[in-house]
Image (cartoon, rainbow, N blue to C red; front, top):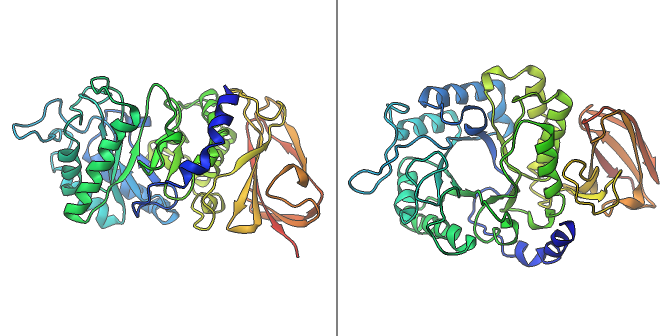
Length: 402
């Protein structure tokens, strides 16, 4: 399968050049989404409390400025005029009141719909109502629309044609109101959206739903390792919502998960109960030096693999993806290096500068560890760091010395 992906990557420049710049989110979106932890168990109190907690804990100041309501906010039937109906038991004060509350705190608000006749959870879908629904979302004060693809089989067109309907709807609503919705979509079945998504949306899912376990995280990252060239400013590969704080992920696995999502320039949408996060998990999600790479306004390309490590380079392996990744940060004198230890034991990392296309073999580099938050010295030719725990990550900034 990896050979097929390399063929796709060879055409990436054509797609990247056509990215849909609708003036929103030059860098990946950051925020919160209800689905991973709460699924259908949502209401306005949860949204309000989450927003207040995120602001109090420093998440808003760190850049997490979207509060997104996923599926189950609506009823199964539209009203007599054809409009979606908010569940009055879950949101008795109304969604307009809720978005005004979020905006008052400094957040932006996101909402969910589906391309089909029903949503994934069985509520009213948007098929043939795209313009009506986009207009409603803007009227209710939303800034972000996540469009799913669970039940769209009744539409006979291609996936690009299906998702283009929401692009067209948001564009028309902008012409009417001056307000553009951030547009993120989830493609099912073929999962090839990176080849056609850039001119259609701001972000597009690249794999099946995330789960709070190491095996699913490695499988998603493995897929991402072959398609980094399709992601850049204004359009991003979406590795799915963060599972930090969920399941049985160790702190090392949470650190690797967050590191990989951030440095592949995926959207960073927290999907847990903010009130139950440990301080260690909070510290991982708030690492300013990692977030700065994700939100880099000078370099839009994500980090990409330069050395697979245990496997031969270019190996498709959902359980053991590429270990060594690199990419420029801020300018071409600064290179970010990411290493993830997929082994079940503690190991050392080492590579020569000539391995990475972002480093010059004949230069010296001052190196900073972004998880230890410390400068570790000036190196030439070769880099070594010892005792990386199982499933843990390291990130460094290499600064070229003149």
